[in-house]
Length: 329
Ligand code: MRU
Image (cartoon, rainbow, N blue to C red; front, side):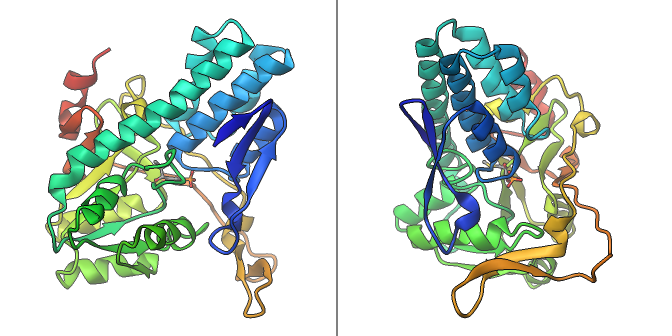
């Protein structure tokens, strides 16, 4: 994403993988709406886009406290959202400074992701078979991503790495977005139903799991897309290492444990309907549950630190229990 005059330009993610379109967000309210409705999503991209939204508020010359609240309330779980907004508020007094700070935040994400790729690379020797959940790639963390970043790098270096991509119901970020990114990168992969991960793990066809994060608590508990917890428990049961990759801005030392992390509950229609393309190439939504049925839709879950082998940030790979020591403010 980037700024063009007063507009924030983003990739319209719900149209993927069938259509690639950019969308212009004309003011901070439109930007907040795009974050809330998941036109853009993924922790780092949420942070950078929100920073641009805050810069728009400066340019619009509106009440900055109100604009901050509008933006910060969009997605409660992603720590990067508040982190980025606080940075713009703390460092910018003019609109020009706010735009520059937002640009710096977006650029830093790219640098941090490249470092995550470099540091994570040794975990992916040729022949690795990896499982990932949700989308933490190009679209989710400004250009490079977190969990897939070392995989992209390993592939670019000619290593043979294969990825099992969880479809990630209810919104299918794995099937729609991660697979699309891997196709562009040429990384061999297969989309699997969320329920199939345990099957492949038990058959010895998964060497390592890696996921992104939306918020990491001081004790190493990790909030990430709903379903991550199940995969971590299954990985432990099958003796498979389970890694989390995220920029350090995702660590929230104010949350002592995962119990302090707010979990976003989204509209139940995300469970009732699936979006996609028909054979006639028309885009649309299909109802998959009985009319009148109700559904629960927690967007994230918390994986306790005990299931996590290591957390990869741009500062190195640490055991969850060592986070406090390394990231003490
Ligand atoms: O609800 P989403 O699609 O924003 O959730 C995305 C995830 O859970 C990602 O794994 C996480 O944000 C890491 S992205 C670098």
